[in-house]
Length: 85
Image 1 (tube, rainbow, N blue to C red):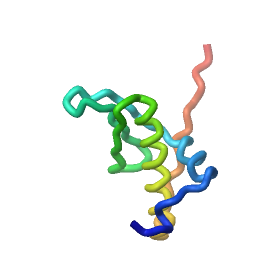
Image 2 (tube, rainbow, N blue to C red):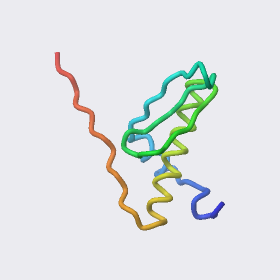
Image 3 (cartoon, rainbow, N blue to C red):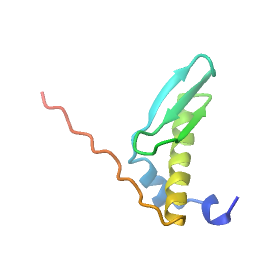
Image 4 (tube, rainbow, N blue to C red):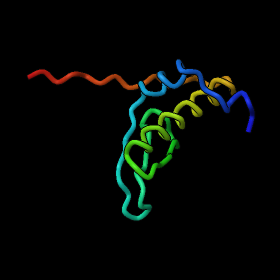
């Protein structure tokens, strides 16, 4: 693997957590699957929900790093509107 894509700074990992992660249990895979609506094609998994969050964060970091390395545009994180009540 290219060394420039292998390591993430704390800022890059914090940026990754701004993206939406959809995490769902897959009985077929016996794992929690992670997708990110803003980043098409990104899919990772974890044995536990906590591991899935970490794997998702790392996958987002790698995805964003790869886009920047290739000079591609980086999609903005989705904004979530608070529901008043």
